[in-house]
Structure formats: C-alpha cells, structure tokens
Image: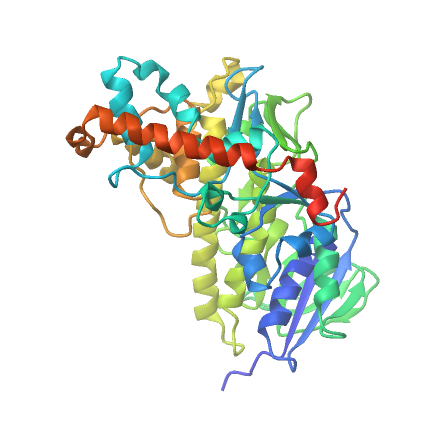
Length: 449
C-alpha cells in the first residue's frame, strides 16, 4: 500500500516560496508538515497582479490587504514604442463593453464606419469607447465594486506590489508555527533512477527530507529539468536584439518600453513540459521564465499555486496528480506565451531585429486569435484564459488588426438607431469617467501616500 504524504519541503527565494507555502497551509490539514528553506531575498522586484486574481480569492486577500502591504493600484499598462519609437498604446484589463442588440460594439462600429466611408478611422472611433483604457490614460482609479451596475464593473484593477512585500504579507497571515522556516540554500538533490527525490542537502551539508519537494530556485543559464516547450517569438526576441524594459513604479500608468538591447543577454525564455516528476515539483522560476511583460512570471507562479492546490496528492503514488498538474501547467504557459508574444509579434517597428521577430512563428493560439479577428471580428476561446475577451479585442484593434467584415446581423438595424445607441453608450462612459477620482485621491482611500 502506498504511504500517505505527511510532509512538504519548499526551497527558493522568499518571494517565490511563500505564495506557494501559504496556499499549501490553507489547503492541507495541520498534521501535514510544511517546511520552507528560503535563500536570498529579491527586495525591490515589482509585479503587477490583478486584484481579482483567483489566487487572491482563494486566500481571501482584498484590495485593502494588498494596500496595507504597500501595493498601489492602476487600471492598465502603457506599451511604449511598439508601433514606433514615439508611440504609446494603453492596454487595460476590461470586462465586455455594452452590446447593441446582442452584437459586440466593434461589429456595430464597423458597420457604421463602413457606411460613412471611414473604415480607415475605425480604430480611432473605437478608442473613444475603451472606457478602462481611457480611465487608465487619464490617471483615474476605481474598483468594480464601487458601482457594480455602472461602467465601473468593467474595470480590471491591478496591484503593483513588491514581490517580497507580498511574501511578508502572506507570512503574517499564517497561523503561528504552521510553516517551519529555515534560512539557507538547497545545494543538491539526491534522486533515484525514476526521478524520485530521496533527500535534499543544504550548502553547509545538512540533510533535509520530505515526502514532496517543491523547487522554486532560479536555474540560471542552464535549465536542468527535462524537455522544454517551444517559444519561437520569445526566443527570437531575446536572441535577436529586442528587449522590453519594465517601469512598474511609473504611477499612475506602469510602462513597458520596447527597445533594442544595449548588450547581449545570457537569459533565455524557457518553460518545462513536465515540471512535476515523481515527488519533485518545479514551480515559478524553476519551471518557466517568460519575461517581465505584463508580469507574466509573477502571475504564472500564483496560477501554479492555485493549480497545485487542486492536485494535492494523498499518497506517495502521485502519478495521476502529476499528470493533471503538468497538463494545467502546459495550458497556462501557452496562454501567457500568447499574451506576451502579441505586442512583440504585432509590433510595427521597422528596425531589422523587429522585422526578423515578425517572421517568427507565433503561438498557435495567438495566430488563431489574429486570423479569426481579422477575418470576421470574432475570437476563439481557449481553456485557462488569463485575460478576458475584451482585452484581446482592444489589444488587436490598437495594433491595427481590423475586422475585414462585420456580423451580418448588424445590417438589420436602422442606421439612426445605431447612431442613437452609440451616442447613449458613449455619453454614459464619459459621465462615469468624469466622476472617477484621480489616482492620488484613490491612494489615500487606503491610507497610502
């Protein structure tokens, strides 16, 4: 009979191990031991995380809790330089815009613009209806719960927080002695021929044992964890002279700046195909590195913690749980890869290395999104989406992916009716936007500077 799982050992940087340890502590009985070996901290690494992330829901963390840990709040990101050195796109998480007669707004706008002979201005006309992006660009702030029956319900606020400060918040919320913490660094793992870890050894020679080992260490330049997934756009970008610099503390609109690399980078994107093998689970930086754009690495770690909670093994025979987790991991990496590849692949920069980047094969899901939206203004939906449909519509439109045709149901409406409906929606959005508090006023709501 397979033995029950009685202990977990997590090791890596504080910012990485504690989000996983906190989730385990919330899900596992108190009789199961959880030990953390945390090495050097990475204080000062800011991440932009959705306030409504499933991880925060699972641990009942709300905006005031994040604010208490030092978080500031924003409604979107500025993508600088992707359409040219002086260009800017505001990308803001957003719920669906109001529909007209059951039709998505961009279909209605395309019909109206087509009849007016203004299809070349469709993206410009659409921009006025992008409520969340306009609020972000104007330095406004709010939460969906402030007025759930108004356009505020579309907001997708982000918390900008130091990853180590988030880890400290999670430590504070743990029950006393629920997780044993040891300062140090795991230097070696002893594994059998089946990949099962028999013991871990610290750098000073101490042996540490457990039933399940969770590795969150940065692998550095050499990835030693098995087969990796193909990431053509990211691989081409990093190898070919393209870089994205993150300025997340640029309130009220954090910025991602597209630029040429000033020096060669030794870092390479990667994602393991199977991070869970036998009783060893690689998470966070040990399982994937996709870069800083949209804080996908920080978001992937929280997503993995949620998925791990869904796959916790009851016994030492954990092959079923490992197979399910690896499937969820692969799905999540695909979704985040599509997200970060989109602005890189769709860029209109004319420098050689940007032109080479556009020749790389885009992720399959991204290619399907672009093709279907350009062809008929619709988007496929995949399992495990990490941003909502409206975010994709807004992003594709901003990068010049314009539908070649609209939904034929739009032809059934009288043009005057459509004009009135569009005017009503735009007026409601403008009115709500004007009433939203400035970013600084919202910060004082939680006692923040």
